[in-house]
Length: 225
Image 1 (cartoon, rainbow, N blue to C red):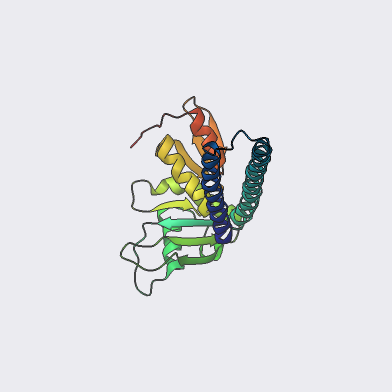
Image 2: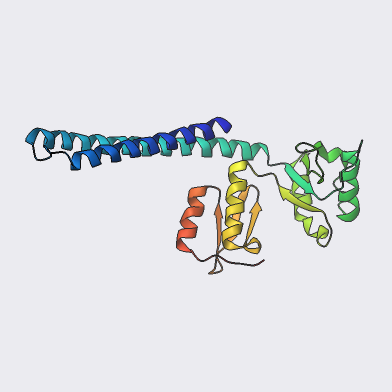
């Protein structure tokens, strides 16, 4: 995903460079003494065709890159389908994370069907800092993962919360959607961002282009604190 981001930046840098150079050339042609010369007119027509070809090629590159990025994102999202992130659990030295998670699930969340054997992977994310890092938990089955996800409301009023482990592109879309439509009107479900629209309908999106289309239809943001 990092390589595709670098490629996307290279394409955009190339587009900006081409636009700047073409603008310079067009300005020089407009003020050239021989602008009315037949030969210059032919060259001008050739340039117009060349310019059109360049922009079409860049548009095709953008489109192909978007398809690749979206494909990789779908694969990465599928690999995370059994994962949940637990936020707000105090971080301690030499902590027993599986025991801590099991205590939360069976105690506060009252899920007796999910235990330590239901967890495949359990570790903190990122580098240790002042704030407690989220805990990544990968469950053995979707059944166990879904049971915990559906019971997350039992944590309401506590410092602990549970979220899905979205990919970077989808997390960016999610954050932008919440900023535009309001936090209470946006949530995620199995890696998909769900938005409650002003007309009461629900839209499911995963890409920036899909969000862009929705914000164009509903330019006025919703503020819910």
